[in-house]
Image (cartoon, rainbow, N blue to C red):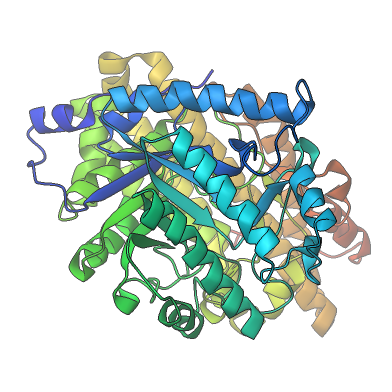
Length: 572
């Protein structure tokens, strides 16, 4: 079971004398990802995301008895309604406003079939016709039914850039963009926003939050021209808020502060993620307080209406945590910054460390945490490539969730080979930073054990061993394969020898990681060598790639070459 490291943060931090109270800088502080609603209150949120509009609607007003009593879909919708009723009532008792959400377009598959039978015959995916009044009648009915049933749902949030409708559960859906961003896309997006706004805002007096999120560098979320054209074509902005990630694309490093923030004069809330699927999800320290502090101050200066903080979630699969302490650190820092962006990220880290590990060790733990961002940057990205590929997939998702891929590596090499020494050195530096982080934490051993106990120390220490072991695996992987690719291009025997040394070191590091990490107390589930979440995708992934490269290298390569640390070694 996860160990939840939370408490009444504001009071504890103030009592410690490390922070000063300030009025909320952000009017709206939206939270998501918690399973215990009291946590939202502790973190200072005033709006929480609960429930999916599409999964709460039965469409009785237009299709009576469409959902057969006792059918799987009818039971599923009733289950969602009961859960939402319980949680929304609890939220109300805590003084938290409720925000519904939905991907659009999303409909029960049986409703979609009814629309087709009634004459809707669109040419796009699922046959949805944005010019069909048949479609809009059903779309409006969904929102009217749910908003009428739940009068205390104050906000509705819509996403159109991705769609996870879960056909296996009886729902079908599609994004607004069909094949490309063309004139039809702009027309359909503007109508969808306005049709939704008229029901949510004009008819029911609620607030509509529209996520600009979509995929890539060229859409609503990242491209000012697309953003402006959509916004300028809206007939009304009454009751409308845009939600925008603080990064220009997804929550990667090597992304600019999103230029859409503050653009167009529409109210905005800005999105922040605390457990990034591209950076381990809390399996090891990855303190993003400094990054969030800078972004939060810029948001405050621009005058945004609020923030939306993802406490957890994002991505697919693992790593699965036994202890979420490092995620809790990021949540605490981000939510405190939402209430006072002038706070110091270092001060927040030290105050958190004092509570979790004891005051005597707080400074050393904070020193360790302030190194973690640089370590992750050097370990999980490749600087020469990322600098030239700002925005969408600056690492080509070499590591995402709990998988280490092989498919992107050649492209990362091609984009880095003009600065190959830098790319190789960066990975060695990541290992050195991870070792330094572990050593700093170990130097606080006695005080942590004295003030918080051996188990608390062991859990945190295990995550630092996890990080160090993972940096060694990735360092030897990238260095070995980049040197291998360079040997393939040049035929240089010295490069072949260096590649062989690194790949043999990778084999040892990978074996040590796979066998040692699962034994560590408090350690998250380990990373896997795959290209996707499917086990069959292991072919061509990291381990397969490295072993095949070793087979193709000359047998004598690496007999006497310099190792990764510059020491002369002999390898057979």
